[in-house]
Amino acid sequence: MAKGLISASKVLWVNPLLFPAAMWLASRLLIWIAMLLIAPLLPAPPGGITPTFGWEVFDAWDSLNYHAIATTGYEFVNDGKSHILAFFPLFPLIIRILMNLGLPFEVAGTLLNNLAFLAALYFLYFWVKEQAGESAARWTTAVVAWCPLSLFAGVIYTEGLYLLLSTAALAAFDKQQYGWTAFWGAIATATRPTGMALIPAFALAAWKQRKPPIAFVASFATAAGLLLFSIYCAIQFGDPLGFLHAQKGWRPSLGFNWQGWWKMLMQVTIGTLNWKHGGIKDPLHPLLFTMIIAVGSCLWYFRKQLSSAKVDYGFAALVFLLWILAGDPLINIVAVFGSAYLLWQLRAQLTPVTVIYGFCGIGLLLASGGTISLSRLVYGIVSPSVALGVLLSRYPRWGYLTLLFFTILLASFAVRFAQKLWVG
Image (cartoon, rainbow, N blue to C red; front, side, top):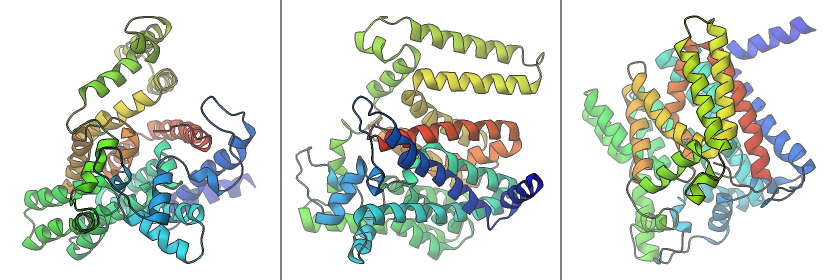
């Protein structure tokens, strides 16, 4: 029996037709168990609820805006208070079509995002396999499926759909299929604002690789989805840039938000309570942070005297403790700047369009003026996940430790989302 299970697991790990589906199903099962079975058994946390078993657990936060768009359409007043136009139209439009076929909103939105995410994993697997090899493809697929932010590819958000469209566009570009590049890219720019990063990414990659003129045509054709949404805003609301003006409700102003980043840095190093009071009211947080950094420095300094396993497990334990201490602010900082570092370090192992799109996407987020949900938005930019997958394919032990850490966070995020607590 044990040999049979081991053989089955090996088949799933190496079979290119089964592996993406296995990663999708296993990670989704974890989310469903956490949200539908575990969360209802827990007492309501402060500021949250005790969820009930049903489709409603997948409908919260941004999902409410997509619900409003799918059922009543867009409303916009350029007063800095009406925000719904900041949500791009393709996702709620497809949900509306499914609702017209008789599906409730919660069912339509959840099925759309989950199935799109499954398709995205297949596009991702075969794209990375062609560019970096089978091992990198497996690790990249596992990273994207088990990343804690993949929760948002399982609820009523745009992550699954956008990952499908953007990954398909990037893969088509690398295969020199410029008609498909324009098609997938155009509908990606109609799905969420970060799709705008595809336009300069394709143009710059075409220039760097000296591609034929048709590649530049495809690059700018990618903007078709954004252009159509702009035309709609002009006709319906008299403001072709209404989707940009609506962003004022989510961020103070355009440009790098120094105050927001400084706040997150202080929350990580000295703690939220001390930051709010402008002084050290709780000495435990900075003391623990200093101890973690000191132990990590000692591990690195004496790494040659220790076995590689001890160093790896030691750093893994420290990362876990640091997450318990610092939480979401730490994840946001690491997601943005860690992703940029990975892309730069592995730029020679990735295709030019992968690297350029990653930097364009991260640059767009840094210039947007917002610091909310940055880790989720970076997750939607597939390039950092590809870079991490390529890296972990060379260091399997770190890969398994990373996936273990991801699994713990994914289950935690799923429970929090079901309880209507803010995630990401």
